[in-house]
Image (cartoon, rainbow, N blue to C red; front, top):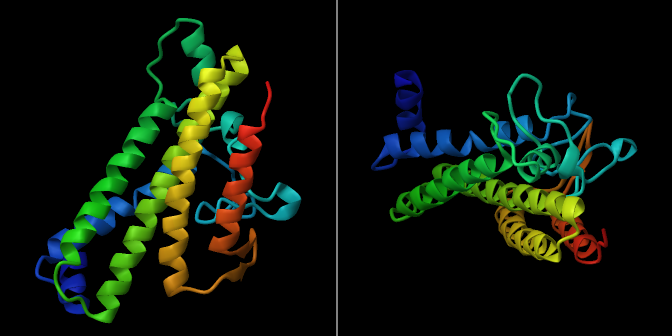
Length: 224
């Protein structure tokens, strides 16, 4: 860690380089956490950053896909369908639950955003400012997935029980996810252009926002 901190100090002139390093580390936990929860073996299967798979492999991964998609093998982690069946049967588990994943994503995202606010209190050079914006984008991506995973969990309960209250909660959480993905897109579009990736296809934040609107609409009109 000392090597990374010394290197970071040379490149980024900030008053608190340790805070910058720690904030970067926190934000860097988000994508691996989502990957282990929504597990797909190959980079053609999906890109976490865009929630998109190659079109022939299903394209955008919506909230319905998140209900029963497998978790990473050997991680002792339940997907929403497994979790809701366990809860409704009155059983307990030592496995990690979707709710715990959501709590972790929110904790990391909110801490990263708070730290970024502190870092932005000082005048940053262009390179450091770009890095801080990238970290903020990752934080909002974490909030997007937190909302989406929570929505998928409520959707799973609705599918198992037909209780409309679960559907209302699912819609509410997807609206939170939409707000987060809008912020993610806003920050990312200010720094980068959409690009064609070799495996999952076009990486376009605007498209991700539109797809999220569609999945919210599909969820609102869904009947079990």
